[in-house]
Length: 559
Image (cartoon, rainbow, N blue to C red; front, side):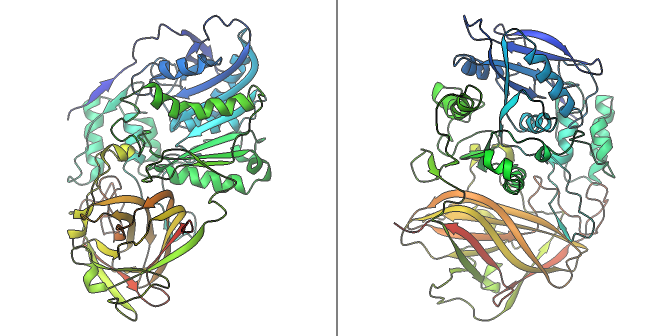
């Protein structure tokens, strides 16, 4: 087994490192970046991350240079147990009070004016929510990007629930790679070998140690106290700029936070949305040849950081300015500018529904069955209710279209060939006579069944070009416990801002696997990592009638 270990990078010459003591005596490695020639106290931007505060992956020295050039002090810290910081390597559980204690240290420095904002992506977006939960009075604004309070949470069904999220492979790989010990450990699992957990044990034997975070979650997960001070949504509200990417594989957690904030009046008044055509690694749909981690041009850095600067200028410095409630991009429009709306989706948007039909054709090659908008002619569509079936086989799952789902847009794959598989149902609409702007939530209603003990349902909405190329617009998935003969499910495909050009068509695909991004159901009902064998399951979905497959999109009116 090949394991690549990456330790801390060299210290930045632009920062001063301090070992900041937490309340239990553990010291965390902390870099302080100050503006050139600015000795007066001023506001501070804090980032706490597990990816190495001086490593190439997150390029914090360059980020700090952008903020300090605009008058901010920046503090970047390795979280507990990572890289140069002391303490046990354990994900999620120490971030709340470590965040509070770090803010407390910041405000007592002579370069601080006692005002702090937080910024960062993914896990260093989660650490912001953890800090907010402790209600430190110096924390005045936050910018959590492509993250969520439930980031990385294992999909354990609630009592009495019949569905839950499908398990992503990263759920268990994250504590095996980023939270195994102080360094980053990169390795690959043989997904054809069962039980899958045997490969993990081989990894432990090779590296010579176990991951405490993995052992807490496997085989029976222990609920982790992410927020020991209480839910962040119960803490005093602070201005928050939520950045969500249309192709971010972690976006469901951030949209869940948005819904929670909307239910809390104080938080709702302080929430601002920045909805971008990006994936988790900040590759932009408009800059696919220049993914951010590899290309840090001034233009790309400005796109990445300037909205945060403008937000902090208003809420940390008190400068005059109007921060729009919602800014959003319309991907595939040729215009990367940020549009502005008073709410999301825009007030003028409306829902449009498409109905899927054609069971026999759906199991064949593209274009498969039909997808017809409500009110449109249904020539060629099969009338009445029918049923489409397919076989899910975990030994031969539908392959994930990208190698790195966090950097989906870096590949932006053509998914046309997935339609050739017998275990993928395909429904394609007629070519559009005029452009269609999808702006807002996307959902699929279906009534499904299975002869297996559980069933995963994956739905993908695609843009089909005249040459047959098919590109992802939105997707969603659910695990259904005990599906039986007929179970009604609503799949949330997230939100999008996407223009489907004239001459292109919409395509909906349904399947029961997407591996290895998602751990395939073995077909036996056993634990997915412990099952030693697999059993094919026959799946089915209703078409036509009141319980048939329907695609619901939010669209802007045609000009």
